[in-house]
Length: 219
Image (cartoon, rainbow, N blue to C red; front, side, top):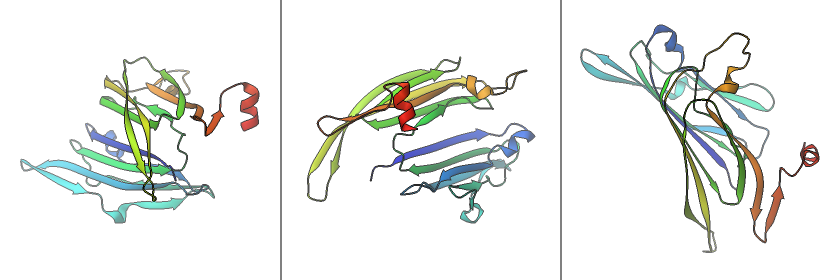
């Protein structure tokens, strides 16, 4: 069954005491779907310099906590080990979901300065999305495609084009709170993906954005 995979990778330098809490991570995932969402491939390493040598502390699986939030939500939480001022923390994880077209909002600007922010979105040619870029910082966008082939149990092959969108921003300043600005995230550098249609010629057609009435019917 098709799934959507989100892989997040971050490398962070801790510059002051207040930044020591940044590697504390909590990921929400949904359980009211079949198959349900899950978080995997959690990897966290903390690098420090001690006596002129580099040391590495890796996150133990015992320090990854999976807890129930509600009847439809669970959370995975963990913290980077041995974090101090001057530490470099590397973290990555993958969220797998059956909601293949629910890309949503991709943020390239955060509450702290970012030297390099990059996002890659890959999807089959049968999905058509409305893209809306926002934010004032420059962002480089490129689109490419390549041919993918699926093999079935009977030996049949199915080929299709995979569209690939890439975004890159450099030296992105922190998004900060301002007087009378109750939601600064609205002004951060980000890209919103909204599913427009799903079309397989001669097989399937579904239009998700024809009119407000159509939207009401779906809701």
